[in-house]
Image (cartoon, helix red, strand yellow):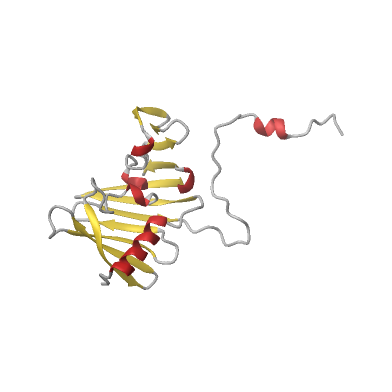
Length: 196
């Protein structure tokens, strides 16, 4: 474990950056006590667009960044979000996709703060100490090169993110496209068959 301020600051910077500019899909695992939930997720981190469907046949939650509303199966949740509450109100299923949503950075309302880091192969792990009870620890692991979050473990919670690997068939992967516009746009973009 490296407890030097310089190395810890570099590791925190990489972790907060998240390296997640492009859209992706994956599976998230959320465990609290003996209760494990799995979700398929689609995320575009820079646009704050996400959806999470509980497996095998559970509800789908999405975030509408234009209206600042979380929806469950297309129905608006009863409360809206302010800019200050984003991403703090995101569900556990997508929290690893938005590292600032995790209560581990030592901010006023966070439960933990990083105290050391360790590089193991291609991963970096931040050792987290509880703010109130200094005998309680957790860990946050991310890919060292990209900053992509992988796991968060505390005595009460375990989060794991498995991202799907983009195709390596020579084609470009642009992730998913989300829009709020005209559903008839494709028809209007086609040239009229009677014109030359």
